[in-house]
Amino acid sequence: MRKLNEWKAVIDKFKSRLSDWKARSISFGGRVTLIKSVLSSLPLYYFSIFLAPPSVIKELERVRREFFWGGCGSGKKISWIKWEKVLLPYSDGGLNFGSLKCKNLALLCKWWRRLHTENSSLWAKIIISIYGPSGGLLDSSPNLNSIHTGTWSNIIRAGTIVTELGVPFSSSIQKIIGDGSTTLFWKDVWIGGEKLEQKFGRLYRLESDKNVMVRDRVSWTNGTCVTTWQWSRETFGRTEGDLQALISMLNSFNSAGTGEDSWKWVLSPNGRFSTKKLQN
Image: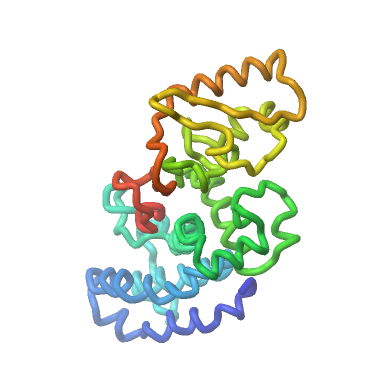
C-alpha cells in the first residue's frame, strides 16, 4: 500500500459518493454534513491498518476540497479560504473537518496502545515474537524499517511521525505500577514522565540486563524503597551522582506494590486512549 494505484479503491469510493449535481444542488451546510458524516469515514478501514502515502492524502483532500467548494471534478471553483484553515477545529476558526493525515496517524497509533494492553492476545504474541519484547516500538535503530518491512513497520513509523510533529507520543502511554512484573525498568515510561534510559543514559549503559523488569530492580515495603543493581562495573564520579539522583526519585515514588501493572494515556484526563483526542 505504498503506491497511489494501490489506493485506487479508496479514491474511487470517495469520488463515487460525489457528483456534480450534489455539489450544485446542496448548500455549504449540506456539503459540510456530507463531508463529515460520509467522506471522512470512507477510508476508516484502510487508515486503521496502512500508512497512506503523501500522494494519496493529497488526492483525497483534493476530492474533499473540490466537493466543498462546488467543483467536484467539473472544473476548478474559487477557494475563498485555505483548505488547511477549513480543516481546523471550530475553536481555531475552522469547520472541524479534521486532517486526513492526522486521522490516519491517530488510527495507526491506536495499535501502540493495543499492543501494550492486549499483549496476551495471539496477534500481539506474533508481533512480539518477530520484533522483540517491546514489539519494535522502543527500538531506536535507524535501520528498523529496512530490516522489518510491512504493515507493522509502518505502524511503528506512525508513532515516530507523531512525535516529530510535536506530540510526545512515545512517552504519553505511561505505566501504572502494581507489582512491577510487566514493566521494563529502563524502557517503559513509568516514573518522571520519561524513560529512565533517556534520563539516566550513563547508568543505562552500565546496566547488565537492558530489559530488566521493575520488580527485579526495586521494591517498596511499608513505604521504604529497596533497590537491587547489576552493573557491568562499579559506579563512580558522574555515574555515582546519577545513581543517587535515581534512588532519590525512586524513594519519592508511590507504588501500590500489588496487583497487575496497567497503562494510562496521559494526554487524556480520564487516562483512556482516544484517536479523536490525538487527532486534534
